[in-house]
Image 1 (cartoon, rainbow, N blue to C red):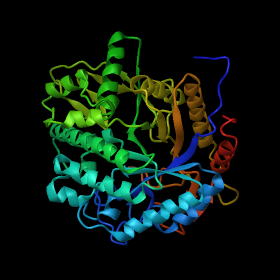
Image 2: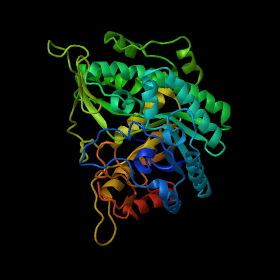
Image 3: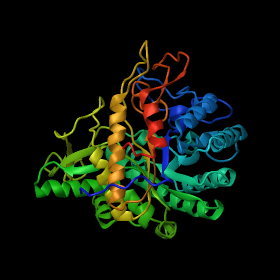
Image 4: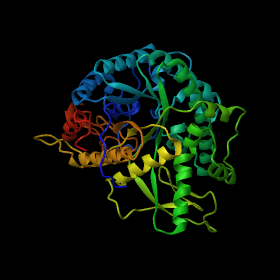
Length: 471
């Protein structure tokens, strides 16, 4: 909607940036840290593993000094579960506890608000070996005990908490659950069992946060894909609605409303994938409502109707990493109206406004953007600085859409770009760079890991200083 005036960003808007422990810290086997499922994941040998990453573990003071120079108001990061509990439960690793104490103290000293993700993909391998991890109900108590330890240890300084990052991605990617399964139907069924346990665990953690952390706020961090019907066909519109339900909204309805929506319940029952719901599970979800909703947004997808036939019955799913088609529901189609990144992610700034408005209308919780960014192949030039104008253009246009959404009544807490510095992309190694700060290394050549400020660093610094008046 075009309006006569667009309001400014509020003075308390949290201008931030993001990272994840396994993608930036390195030191994957140092100072008592245990192994996570990401540490042992089979990867393409042409890309790097997570053992060194951006070496943030050893250089966090240098990195936070750069954040302070930029003027960041917030830094969203995750705590590596296995730095605190090497086996996922049991004995505490005091060196890991001390690292995050020091990191948080350094942020507070720089006047940067810490936003902590409790669990961001790097699930403890020890829990998988003990009982199968998220596939077993014992995982609920172990997650809650871990979260409670974090609240008691860091809650005097950390007031913003995120329960689980991109739960939908964990559900659909068996390696993030710590198992391999050639039968995709069986893997999906197990994924939805894990999803149920995660929802119960997150709800209980929300209750613990409200009990322990004075003034604490907590919520889920979903990855939201804006879906469009490919044509004006009513069948495509229905496919779009259904894709949104089974890709975006199913776990949010559980996390926020404490319910399996009728559409999602029927979806699971038709495919024999409905997990066992124990007495009290849904009640604990309803009783522990999040304080806000965080979401990651990178791209949109266009979908068309995909009727079943003899070769593609109900339950037939096509995968890349996430489902790209499902018989009887939808199939993803290239959107000819949008340009794409080198990795095929269609660039759609308006989709961010659409996503925010959909989430606000359905859940009416304040929104916090925890990831939004432009990945590209980049090499530092021999002279001058890296002029990443494409990143500036991407971020500027997406921030403008946040401003437009706010102008129509959507409430935002803040915006955290992905990412502050270059780090390891989950599927593309160091070849896919997102940062304002260039980290001088290649896939397998660590070089000197020096930090260098890209052109976008200065642009975001100015944007923060002007509180977005340049957007």
